[in-house]
Image (tube, rainbow, N blue to C red; front, side, top):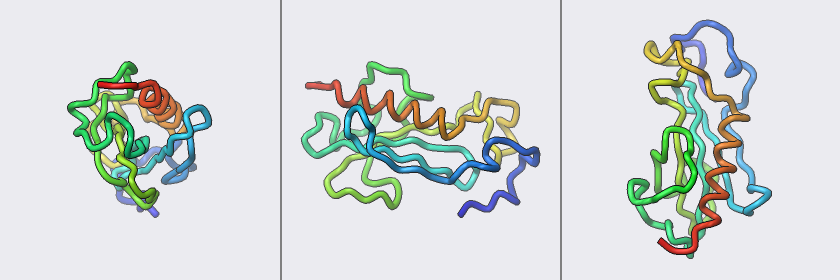
Amino acid sequence: MIDKTQWFHKNTGPWDDEVSGKQWFDETTGLPCLIRRTPLGHLCGYVGLPSNHPWHGKPYSRIRLDVNVHGNLTYAGKTPDDFALPGYWWIGFDCSHSFDLVPGMRINYAGEYRTIAYVKAECTSLAIAANNVETL
């Protein structure tokens, strides 16, 4: 559970009724996907890569995407949360950039809030891009 009472942004918004996380397997690629809300209220999206994937074990700065995921990749590592799948390497992005509304921060409050639906669509794009990689 995320304590929303301490957030700077006191107005109501989509975050009031959203869940704090979601996990699923992408219908097109079969890759595991994960969304998690941080204590500051913004969402992060992740896609899990199996051990035979060319990006498995690489830092996010060495992964070239053919898709422009929100704010670019900002994570690559082991399971970022409790969605444990042995052998998977997770790549992901966050929605806490200068153009994003982050409910728990004093800055960025005039930006656009990125909803669960938005982050799920970005995860789908990332999963498709990762699935289409043959070699680096």
